[in-house]
Structures are given as C-alpha cells and as structure tokens.
Length: 275
Image (cartoon, rainbow, N blue to C red):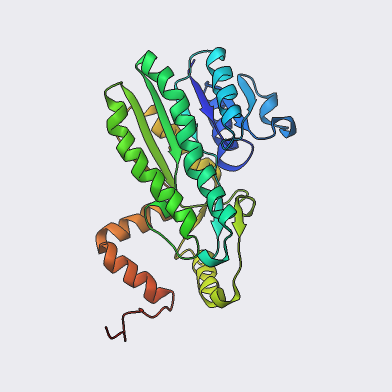
C-alpha cells in the first residue's frame, strides 16, 4: 500500500485529493493547520491527520519526522497556498511576504525536508499545485502570479537536480476551481482599478478568462501525475487551463499579452508615447 503526504488538506483540492487517494487504496497523511477542527478525513480508514503550518519551521520538522515514522512515503503533494488579489500598491509589505512564505517557501521547505529521505530510498515523487497563473499571467494578482511562476521555474530546475537520485518532481497547474474559491483569496482594493476589476469579473463569469472546475477533476489529474510513471514535468488541469495555455503557446507570448490587453479594454502605454 502506497502513501501520500498532503499539505493544505483541510478543504478544497487538498481534501478532495486525500479522499480520492484513500478511495484508491492509498494511505494518506493529511496535514493542516487545525486538524482538531477536521470532521471528515478523521473518520476515513488509513488516513492520518497531522498539524502543519508550512510557514512554521518547527512544525515542518515535527510533521515530517512523524510522517516518516509512520512508514514508507511515496509521494509528497505540496498543495497549501492561497491567492492575494489586487493592485501591487494596495498590498502591505507583510501581505507580499506572507504570499511568498506560504505559496513558494512553504513548498521549498517541505521539499527540502523530504529530500534526504527520498535520496536514501532512491525513489520518491514531489507534486506541487501551481496554477494556470504560473504559466499565463493575469492582471490584479501580480504577487500571486509571481509565486506560481517561481514554483514552475524552481520545479523545472529541481527536476535536473533530483533525477540522479531517481526522485521525480511534477507540477499540476489548475485553472479555476469551484470549491471554497473565496476562502483561499485575500483581496486588497483600490477604487482606481475598478474598471479593470469589473472587466476581469466579466471574463471569469462568462468563461473567457477562466472556468471553474470541480475539485474532483483537478484531483484526478494529481492522481494521474502520481501514478502514470511518465517523465513529465507539467500537468494542466481543467479545460480552461488547457485551452488558455494552448492559446498562449500558439499565439506567442507577446501576441497573447497584446490580445489580452485589448480584451481588457486597456490601451497600450506605448501607443502614443514619445521617447
């Protein structure tokens, strides 16, 4: 029986992935900041709950040690994260740093903690939830986008480092996810950006910019990445992720950016500029 270690398993994709792997016959170590509040996963056979805040060094050390003591671990799923929404100048320094502490550094520290264990076994797989926004950026989420682009670049680099030890690393890049979407966003407002926010909202509502898939569909892609045995780094998850990223590749990055600028009713700052 194989085992997966999951961060951010209290809700949304993390919880659905835990339930899916358990149903598929895996042992699941589901970590979350407040396991005492969990009312579903704690009733499932072969599921162990551990307390873990991925921004807390001591909790990482304790949780990883406890997980390894439970038995062999085959997959580490770095899923904990949230979205910081709004224009850059409306964010506090603390908000910016916190976004990277959770979305990027949390993944780095968990991975770093497990690498010696996987090296000793000469096998193991890391999977990280990134985002369509780590492959094709959108407005009003620059720091969130940056954290996800950082994960994609970091994962690609790590794939070379880990290959010699027979350790895999993969990313799953979802588009929109229906479950608890608003609960994993922190919104900073600035009225001067209202027209752009309104246009973005329209694009999300009509599916042009993003569709919202059920968590089960995204979890299925995580399971695929964990079990297909393929030498593949990136897995797009959701019809919108596949459609939009394919469009970006076909148009080219500059044409895609210009076309999105036009769609958002934005004028190029260079249209009438004189240097």
